[in-house]
Image (cartoon, rainbow, N blue to C red):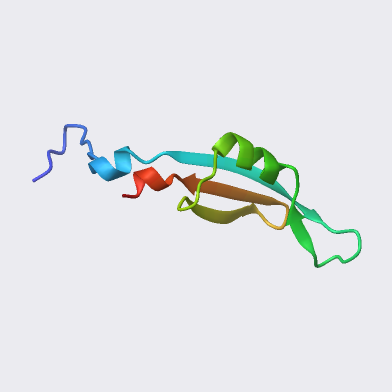
Length: 81
């Protein structure tokens, strides 16, 4: 039973505490030839270099400011096993 007058703490499971999460904001660019064609600009190449992406890494994409900004989260493979 929780005490009402004392601050409670939630402990995270060990696998979650060990996660190596890399976050990156990427600008979504509209192509000049087609207004419906979009791509991630230079941020993608910077992310590949700085994030040291490996086969097996998990990526989660989320639009944070549609349609101009994409949040990319990378969970490293070694943290998932």
